[in-house]
Image (cartoon, rainbow, N blue to C red; front, side, top):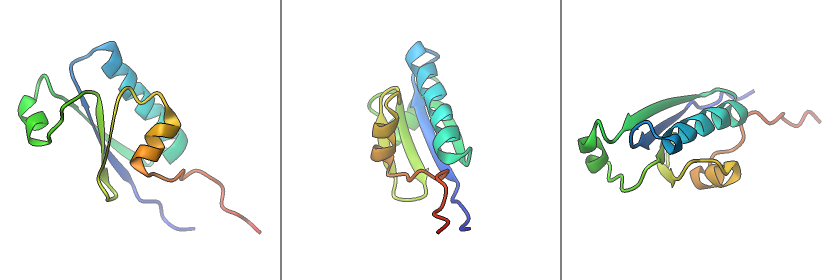
Length: 101
């Protein structure tokens, strides 16, 4: 079986709002379900670190950036639509069973 590549996400939020908290919870749920936990999540609060948001050209929050594996991809919103998130990030479902025929 091929070794899975660890996916690295950066999630840019603006404070501890219900929308921000929802995005974090949705991403964690999706990461467990879709990536079998094989991901790293870095949460960046742009209210606390506005210079990071400016440097990374983050114009809206929440914004999710898939840093690794390349290519870099971005999705904005609360991440509640699982299929749209995965399509936008171009990430295959890692926990599918391999064909055993």
